[in-house]
Length: 254
Image 1 (cartoon, rainbow, N blue to C red):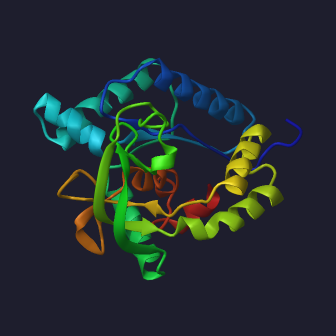
Image 2: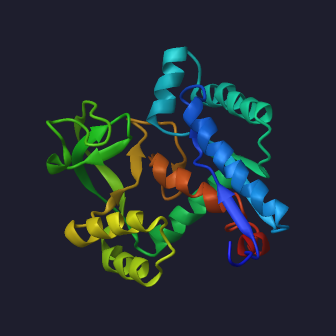
């Protein structure tokens, strides 16, 4: 390392609680732990975050299959992750659960802010839905009629939903990635992302699910008949855990 950083913030992915942890969860957590410990040895202020992703259709389905509530599914499964990290002597500074009030509050405030800025709008949404990936796909995205990500069967769904105006940021994203070469590492991943953004139209993102189809999620603050798309909820954990909209000093630090 040519220059010691002034601070270091490392996270794992947050892990889904529809089932028990496996070797992949351990692998990424051990890697993050190694990076955190390395920087601590250099006397670099370090913050290491891990946690669990606890909303969405797969959790609801796992709970139904086990004959318990989604919250009970989360509470029973999260313990397995926490106990495993103790067994592996993982030294994380924080463990966030997306069902915690500190996270849900930030998600709802963020949604309301975007809605007030007209970055979120309601529309009739039609697409092919993969339960496993919890994502909508267009007809042209499908591979032999199945999900392009996991090859599972998809369902045709037409419903009213809320969408984030992601498409308007396509050129901004291209410019930002090209002018900040260290933003995505390694470099070939940045090139992959740029290749996509320069050849395909970035679509607006469906960020809600009607409670009539999926009840287990964070309520939209501006429409109680809908919950937030699990990926929109989950990704915010990386900033909600370090003070976004709750502790400005801590957030600026990390």
